[in-house]
Length: 195
Ligand code: IMP
Image (tube, rainbow, N blue to C red; front, side, top):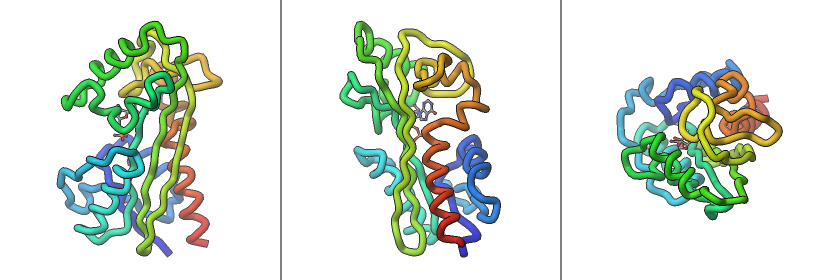
């Protein structure tokens, strides 16, 4: 029976999202709640690698079973860039405005606007590693629309919708997003083993 898991994040929005989806039988603790203030390395060149790196760090130094996520925007016409480098596409400043500007610039004149957000969650539980994936397909528009959300939300329209993630607002976005899909996979797994 699992009663507690660490989520290797201090992002309150992510914590809230995950706590809402995962059964309330499992307590989800943030890094701050285990007094972890380390700068956890994320130097792998894949989403899977980074998610595992973060989860292994917590297991190794804090001895807790835990999970960690990593997300990237993969644009077909750009050979899946920015991908694992999404946060620092325009440089180490992690500037979302600059990242979107760079993306729009690279996509100028591109007919193929297909893109997807992909989230990987790595779970370490009882000495085993597990990976879960969530993908949402969509397209990159030519200029920003909407104020909500963060990152690339103003230029991404998920398939089957007319609005960008930033126009949609967090209510709907958090129901259909890549992260929600990956967390649902994790939740299904956790409830299957706690039966
Ligand atoms: P992280 O792994 O969740 O920190 O995401 C890495 C980067 O991907 C973020 O800094 C954003 O640039 C981008 N990103 C991740 N999730 C989203 C999203 O839901 N909307 C827009 N951009 C996102």
